[in-house]
Image (cartoon, rainbow, N blue to C red; front, side, top):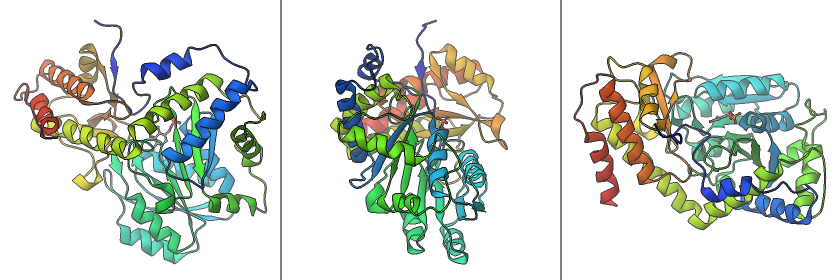
Length: 388
Ligand SMILES: *Cc1c(COP(=O)(O)O)cnc(C)c1O
C-alpha cells in the first residue's frame, strides 16, 4: 500500500506543493519586516477572496471553532436576541456559543438534510428584534447549503447583523460578502482556503465593527476580544510591528501563498470549478445507485457530498476505500451518524482527484459485496467533464 493517500474529507484537504513548501521554511520572528509584509499582504488578500473591499480581516491562531467564537463573543451582549437557522451539527454548535456569550437564542428548526423554509425564517425575524441572524453556509454534517444571499437580504431588512459560518464554504461556494450584506463571514485555514489546520479566519463588516464599538459590556473571553486583535491586524496591514499573541508565522506565510493561488485562479473561476467537480462527483455516485443526505438537489453543496451507504453496506466501507488509497469521512450528524459518509471536494481538487476518488469508492463497494455496474461511476463523472 502507498504511504500517501488522497485526503478527500471536509477538511483538512489536499494542499498544494507551494503551500506545503512555505510551511517548511525556517520560522521568522513575528516582528521581522519580511513577515510583517507577508502578514499585511495576506490580510489584504482575504478582503479580495471574501469580496469585502471594506471589511476588516482577522487571522488568529486557532481552529474554525475559534472563528465561530470570535464572531459570537464580539457582537453579543447579555440579553441580545440571536436567531439561528438550523442546519445540523454546526448550527447547533453556533447556537451553543452564542448562548455561552449571553444571547437568547431562537432556532428555526429543520429536518435532517433540509433547511427551514425562507418564510418561517422571515416570519421569525419579524416576530422579535434580533441582534443577529446566524447561518451555516454549508453544514458539514449534512452537505446542505443555505441560500445565504436571500437570508442575508431578509435579515438586513430588520437591521439584524448577518453572521455566516463559512468554514466549509469560503473560497469554494459563492459568497459575495459585501454585495450580499453579510456582516461576519468566518472560516478556518484547513478547508477550501487550502492551508494546514491552525488559523481561524474572519472578515467583519463596518456594521459589525460598529456593533462591537457600541458595546456597553465587556467581551466575555480574553483571547477572542477584538479590542486586542483589531490593533494587531491594523498594524500588520500598515506594515508595522504589533503583538498580542504570537501569530503562527509559518501558517500565516502559507496563507499568503494559498490566497495568492486562489486569486490567480480567480474567485469566480474557483466557484465554477467547485460546482463542476461537485456535479461530476455526484453524477458518479448517482450512476451506481447512491443517494444523498440533502433532501433536494438545490440544497447540494459544492464543497462536500454526504451520501448514504447503499443497502447492505456499512461504515466498514471507509476502511476498504482507504486501502484503495483514498481517505473519506464518516457520518457526523448524531441522528444518522452510522448511515452515511462524507466526501470533501474543495480546494485545488479537480478531475484527477474526483475520478481517483470515484474509482476507489467503486473498488471499496465491490469488496463490500455491493452489486453495481462496475465502472459506471467513473464513466458518468467523465461524461460531465467531457461536456465542458
Ligand atoms: C469544520 C467546520 C467547523 C469547525 O471547524 P474546526 O476547525 O474543526 O474547529 C465549523 N463549522 C463548519 C461549517 C465546519 O465545516
